[in-house]
Image 1 (cartoon, helix red, strand yellow):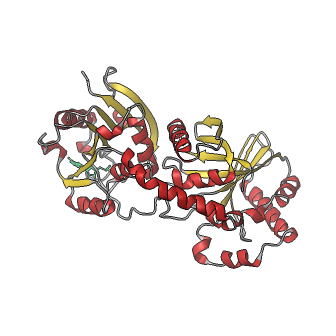
Image 2 (cartoon, rainbow, N blue to C red; image 1 turned 90 degrees about the vertical axis):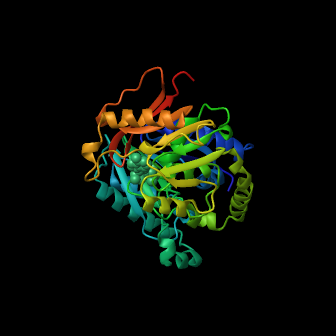
Image 3 (cartoon, rainbow, N blue to C red; image 1 turned 120 degrees about the vertical axis):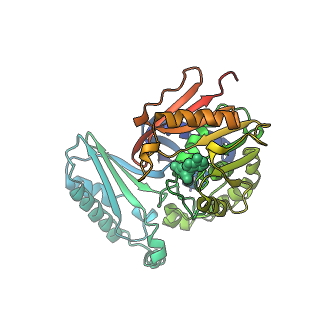
Length: 396
Ligand SMILES: C[S@@+](CC[C@H](N)C(=O)[O-])C[C@H]1O[C@@H](n2cnc3c(N)ncnc32)[C@H](O)[C@@H]1O
């Protein structure tokens, strides 16, 4: 599996640039002798070219993308017979086990725009391909296994000005599903967002090992768990590519994954000095503690507004927080702009952080002091427009 191929890494809208720093850093860590070509970065993702096996293995390495697509073909198509014909000649036996695939189609300014008809032409083309190049029995047997059916990849069709790109999903269930976290609080942040925001918060710090990371409203503990595991290799779940015939038959790919996993053990050392979480709700504290398992993360029950500085002041702190948004029943009246300004001044008093990362919904029109604002990132969290503000301690 040595040829270079194009992959499109999908990111939460507007956050691909932060994903690029993770990609470059981890690529150099894990594949220093292999070339990574970044072809473009746009609002929704990053297009790269690299060795096929390394692109597939990024599923285990990267924490910030939503999913990773493998580009299969690019061609002009203005009518359905041409689309069918092109699809029927693609090497589907490398990626599919003989199943009837799901298709996701999107067209912009193109003659072919009816997604139902596009899906039909693609499925017919794949079936035609199976007729010409019958799928091996061992793969057909796998395809009948309901456990494996969960990982069947979707085919992505995109057409812009009649230029069609065909890609196949290598991820399966979205990448933020890490596999190990079982319990969620009331409004958990998605793991891939948490990983991206942690990067935004720390990207220009020389060494995070000197800092304690504190989440004063930690809910189920997502920020702390992501900070703890930021350099691990995820083998706790399967990815769609692992059921591609080319991957099933590739012993070298499996060996490389085992080696990656083994070498990632000492990567924990690149994490924060300490990870501390506080949460007002005792039931959620219990869930967070279960989620953290035997990881070195301390979760305690505490109300931020009743906390004092004992024991936490004598260290270099970084705080990250996703406070309530006022969208749950019974919450709205308490949450106003002054709730967030009071929250920030309380955090500054209690933890005196060198840096604070806080998510605030745009509807409250929070405007930080320009001197303390290091950076800000706008995105949608659960459909709500929010901004992640990275604030420096004034006077630091
Ligand atoms: C939006 S959720 C945070 C979700 C968290 N980041 C996660 O991924 O699970 C806000 C959390 O703050 C907690 N909370 C609200 N007021 C608090 C307070 N005064 N002190 C500590 N925790 C508080 C809530 O119980 C809730 O779990």
